[in-house]
Length: 230
Ligand SMILES: CC(C)(COP(=O)(O)OP(=O)(O)OC[C@H]1O[C@@H](n2cnc3c(N)ncnc32)[C@H](O)[C@@H]1OP(=O)(O)O)[C@@H](O)C(=O)NCCC(=O)NCCS
Image 1 (cartoon, rainbow, N blue to C red):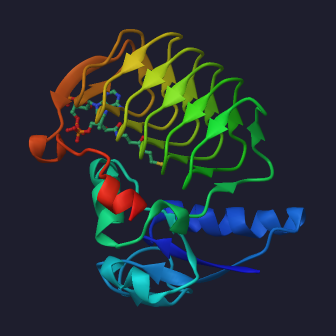
Image 2 (cartoon, rainbow, N blue to C red):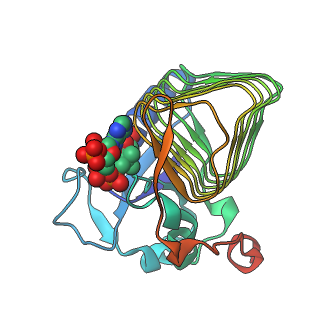
């Protein structure tokens, strides 16, 4: 039995609880001790689990593993930044794959990745560190998903698509084969992406068009060796 702590207490965290329940069918046992969240115990979806402190309290929980469950369209840009505030390193993150996900033996899944119920991960797919793939998303063969990106439920990413780091792919969106999505982009719910998307662009509609650009304050997020490997 491994001990697990959720980082964040909203929708993704609820879904991780379901994933952990499902893993029992594979004799993989995790005990969820509670969650860390900077807003304290009063807000969020997980009122039945104890609040264990703020993100900066993470290192007090020696020997536990953690899952990065923060990742809405409002927070996706700062997932790595928030992880760094915990003082944890990558090996502290659990990599969780739902037993009812279909993952190719030839896919590369990095540390700290969550693959939810019903996801399909095709041949030669590369998934970067800390990526969260929501239920029923499809990632076609030879595609790559950059670190800390979030794939919302039901997104369909066709083959040979390249998605940069810190990207949010909205629910039910569809991305045409071979498309490149720049870092920090936000793909709107239900968008049909037929052209490359520049870094930081917010696109929506069918065919998807740029409706704005994300705030620039997080535009220089880089993978920080100090944070990830100390
Ligand atoms: C695309 C998105 C980021 C835009 O959010 P926003 O910048 O706050 O934009 P607004 O809501 O102010 O909408 C701006 C315009 O775009 C339109 N629009 C917003 N989202 C749209 C979408 N997904 N598809 C088509 N048009 C959309 C709005 O109707 C509005 O049009 P108008 O100017 O003619 O009135 C957001 O609507 C979205 O789709 N987020 C992803 C949500 C998601 O997938 N969540 C998963 C949860 S599990």
